[in-house]
Image (spheres, rainbow, N blue to C red):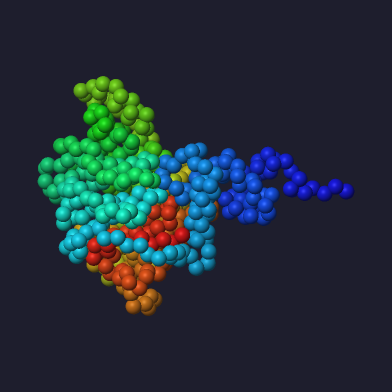
Length: 480
């Protein structure tokens, strides 16, 4: 009787079969024998597999990287690095620091002017910090030989980011607290292989309304101000910073957006979303960008009649249950991403007013008219700020896709935690299959005092956690 031997299959048929394997299974399959290994020379195979992986998680390459323009060896390297990122998380004692810690000085003023990390260019080694004392942005390339470059911008009140391949854009709202004079800045950081990293201001303009939220997408910046008469209307002030065209676009939502509500903007797959938080009610709206661009491309009218109103598309509407009898809570962070709506809160035990824990709630995206119940976890310890200073940034950062978060937790009120150091570095992973929130504590090197950490950041594509140190250094901790 004839036996079916897979090595007798035609080459094209084998390629079609293995293209359906997971990345982990494919790498294992190709290492079985030299005959299978020859399949790895197929350019189309790697593109198909990596495009499928990219639907679930970012690849270990710069944002916007064109897989079709890479050669086979580049694609294999991306596949292996992407697999190592996931494997390191899934192993028993993960994630562990993988290599020696890198450090780079970002300021010579040391304790006088610590920097907060406002942006990490994912897939690169570039970190952008804001130094409040000198009111300047610092571009720090951890692998570059040149010293960090800086631009003085003024006091930052709001910021938003957008990534293009080789160009990172930052929109800044600049102005002193309670001052009437405010401005919009757009900063460009260009970078790339065999290219000098350069940071420059590409647009500035005065503003005449206090901004509550903003987003930047390609060449468009949109500001969402407070309503003048608290009638729940939302009017976007939209600017094309390359052409200089600007206009006002009324936005209509299913529910009034009161001035007392918190408003955040998140960009997902080149589509901006507005997250409205009113007490324990959260509504996410999608902004139809085609209507935005059409309005800017045409000669904008002088009035904002209902003819030009853009209807926001409601994506999710949830009510978060809250145990008012036991805990008070403070909103630390809200993010809308491919994982869904994530809310982080610092919880205080009401009877003692002590911060005791951090609650993370995640509502996965759903096509059902009835939102799914949230996935929730409570971490011992609370997100903190440097030395608990008012005005210092939360020691918390999320990756651009929303799959990872990194935070420094204060466990001084956790009686079950007996270690001398009460500040712990934690990496959070949000998983879709099955939906869950995973947490792992990362042990810091002995020479980094957690009390001296001023700000944190994360690059999920390279598997690196960044720590801004109070003594004027940035540390890069590779966890995969």
